[in-house]
Image 1 (cartoon, rainbow, N blue to C red):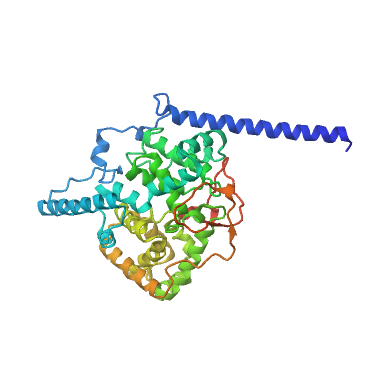
Image 2 (image 1 turned 60 degrees about the horizontal axis):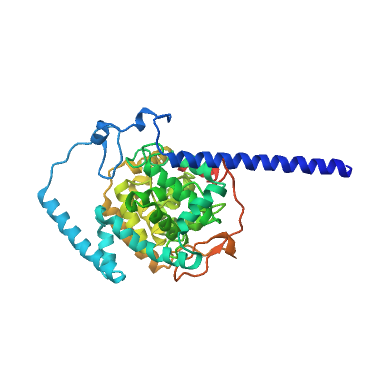
Length: 424
């Protein structure tokens, strides 16, 4: 090929790349503008998206809208008084915690007994250390970090299309996220978009939307949810970052470690599941990826999250074993179809929450005695490049990373391997 033809080929290639970038930029701006405008009467709205009076009859305590009306439960005066006394004790503890910035000595015992739902919005930010994390990052990188990341995402994020798709399928059966382009969908979109620029090692990965939506249910302010996500992914206590980096390395480490623990602590269940070739990938993927969200009744998932935010990542390891131990008799008698049906229906089942939490406590103690509550360290570790992430956490060790190799799907975002999609 002579020099003229080579130059022409390079010019055509550059023109094509420039055109594709222009199209992506235009699409990104269109999506951002829809969320900026918010809900409109001209939107293509499905009938189920429009709230009506009947929805209030079908709404549960947590804001989820069910297909049938929920029966009114009679008010138990003694239970109500007991609940009020409990909330008053928690309020005094939280007030002292906020004033002294010191974790109360009796917090652990109270969390394991259950945090009042009305106070999670005050307790979770304290356990996540949102204020300290925000101050630490802005001290190092400048003020208004969240707003700057939102603006940067509008100009540059490659993940906007995938974020937009996932926002519209996240907790649509919840009153906060039911309205298309409603206030809470706007907040969810902005937090995920901003974080895709803030933590470039992760960008955006499917699975993050539900976690952020949970934070928004209780923290309400989108910037608080942003810093909560920072704490969950980069905090030493939780270390969820590698659940969402390309190839999801921590997820596979969790699944492998779960297999080891299953064999050691519940051998009869392990033997039966092994015989049926019912591998952890078929039931535990979302257990680990989203800390049991959508795979347990919401009230129980909240209890698990209370304890997870207090104790850290070892709760996921212990809870996975606790579930199998709790339902041991059912599992060892089940066929593969019955196992799959049982796991799929677990979130809709009436479970003895106190029994499961007690089992979780026992399993955690067993794992700690055996020094098996934490995952084995990754075999390949590289230092994260300074340009990969801006997030800085106070009093944390240097963060590690694996080799970056981003999967792309629908214009951006890390996606779950196809082998796991059925279990989500």
